[in-house]
Image 1 (tube, rainbow, N blue to C red):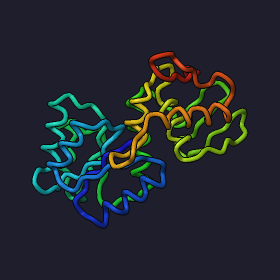
Image 2: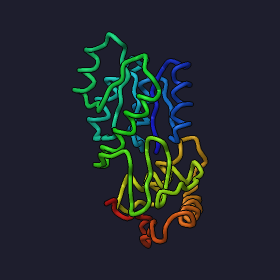
Image 3: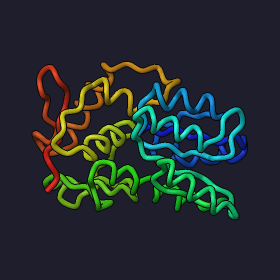
Length: 220
């Protein structure tokens, strides 16, 4: 999953970047509203963490412009403890959730997981496809209850597919959602990771749809 982190405080941004990276997310960053608006309108994200108190262009204006441009990615806004009016304005502008500073990283991660699931119509944090299960809270993948060891890239790819059961996902889409903007992207590496996953998962878990991409079986 690929996120956009928008925060002008260098220390907090570094802490959030580290925590999100450890949780398995590919993270792009912006420290002002102008850059954030551009990234949100030109790149593809599974969710955004957006501080409202930004230089050059405030976060509320950024959010309003994204929504006016038809950008529908889930947005989690960060507000000050006494900024109840910001919460209301943010929700009215199109935010999906908010978090009050200071906060625990675990809560931010839980809220992001929920937003990403809801965006795909999934209610449970435990995603299943036959005997295959992926726990979005722990990052644990099992087949018939037995743990399956995956690399970070293999886990990201599988998680993206399992959030889109029954949907055909192109290699281009996978590349856009699995790697940060500054990563040397190569869609051919997706084939390599799919091949590795197939050797670790039950047969026919990941189907190739010729000329279109890949599809995971629908979750029961």
